Image 1 (cartoon, rainbow, N blue to C red):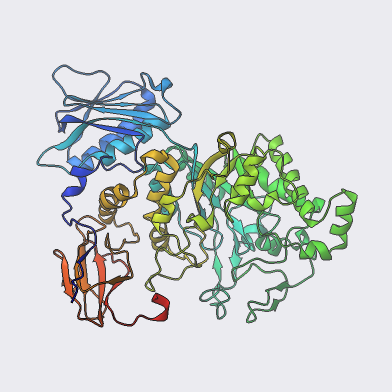
Image 2 (cartoon, rainbow, N blue to C red; image 1 turned 45 degrees about the vertical axis):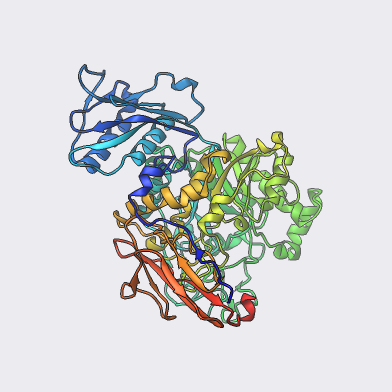
Length: 634
C-alpha cells in the first residue's frame, strides 16, 4: 500500500517566540520602517522624562501614566536632559520636516527620543507604548531600534450607528480610545435613521420626544417573526455630543455627524409628518414583513430595511433641514458633515403631484435628478457655512454635487467613478470586508448578524486604491473606513466583539504602505500579543481560531497537525470523537498525530480559550482517508 506523507499545518506554540521574532516590534499598524539595533534601553525609576514644550504636556502625562501602570513606578519630568541620567525625550525638533502625522522613535542604551508634533507625537507615543514588553524585575527592557513612520491615507475612519441601537457614552468613549490607540482619526457617528433620531435639536423638540422612541423592535433576522412590543428610546443631549467631540479631539479624532436625507427619514417624519409627500398616509411596512402591515399615523420604524416615506422637497423640508444643520454645525466643528443620500426610494416622489411639478419646473430629468437637486441644495447651504458634505455613493445618481466627497459602500465602482470625476473618495465597500456587522467566520457559533462574511484577513487584504485608477486618479482616494451598523447589535459587549480584532486589520490597511503589509507577521506575531493585552482589560473580542487550522477537509492516512495559539497564553482544546470541545477535552500540547484507516475519516474539532475565559468558535477539520464525502464537500 502506498504511504501518504503526513499533512503538517503550521508550527510553533510557545508564546515566548512572539516578541523575539517580530520585525515590527509588536506595533499595530506596522510602521513605514523599523531597524533593530544592538543593545537595549533599561527603563526603570532612574530614567527622567524630558519634555520642554508645554504643548506636549498631555502626551508626557499619558506616557507617565502608562509607565506607572506597566512598570509600577513614575518618571520625573524635566525640561532638559540631566547628566548621568538615562532619558525619554519628547521633541519637536525637526518635526516640521516629517510628513503630516508622522513621527520618529530612536532607541539607544541611554535614550529614547520620540520626535513629532501634535498628532504625530501622539501616534509615536502609541507605538512606543505598544513596543514595550512586560516588566522584568524592576525594569522594562526595550530593544534598541530606529523607527520612521507616517500614514498612507489622511482619512482613517470608523463608523458607529446609534440610530438602530443607542449605546452609553462610556462605550462611545471606549470606541474612540481604541481608534486612537490604532491611529484611526475620523469617527463617523450615524445619528439618525428610520428607527430613531438620536441627537437633541432644540428648535424641533419632537425629534427626540417622538422621533427617538419606537414602540417595538423586530425579533430575529429580517423579516423576523414580529416585534417585542417594548418601547425603545433614547438620544444624546447637545451637552453629551459636545462631551464626545471634546473627548475625541483630545485624541486627534474628528467626529463626523451623519444626518440622513432625503431617505431614511421615518423618525423625523413621525415627529413632523408635514415633511412627508403624503402627511396623512399611514406608515406601511413592505410586503416582506406581512406581520407588520399598515399602522395608523406616521411611525418610527420597528423593523429594518428601506422604507417608502422620504422627505418631500418642499420649502418646509429645506427650512427644517437647514435649521437642524445649524444646530449640528455648532456641536460638531468638523470639516465634513455626512448627509447620507443612500437608499432613497422614489415611489412617493413619482406618486406626488407636487414632486412631479417640481421636477418639470426645475428642468430635472427624473426622480434621480430630484435626488441630485436635493443633495446639491443642501451642499450649497453647508458650503456657505464653510463646511463640506460626504454622501454615500448613491449621490452619484442624477449628477454629483460639485464639492461632495463620496463614500463608496456598495462596492468599489462608486469610488472609481467619483475619482475619475476628480472628487475625493473614502472607500468603505461592504463586499471587501469593511462592514463589521457581517460575520467573522462561517461557523454556526457566530451570533446573529445581518449576514455576509468579513474575516479580519479579508479586511487586511483590501487595498483602498482600485487598480482601475491611474496614479493621478488614485490621489483622490483620501482614505478608508469600516462601518458598524447595529440592527443586530444591542449591547456594548457585542459592539466590541464585532469590531475586534477587525479594527486592528483596518488600521494597518489605512496606515501602512502596501510594501510593508505582511499577513503572517500580523496574524501570528503581533495580533496574538495585542489580543492578550485586551484580554487583561475586560474588553470583549472575537477570539480567532487556531492558527493553521484553515482547511475543512484534508486527505491522507497519517496526519500530524501542528497549531499555534492565536492569543498569547491561551489554550487550544480538541476532540477527535465528533463531540464539541471544551476545557474538558484534550489540551493541545504539541502535534496531534492521527492515523485514519482506509475508507474512514476523523473529525478534528478545536476551541481556543483565553486566560480570561473567552472562547473562539468551534473549528472543524475533516481528516479523510477515502471515505465518501457529502456532495457539498466534493
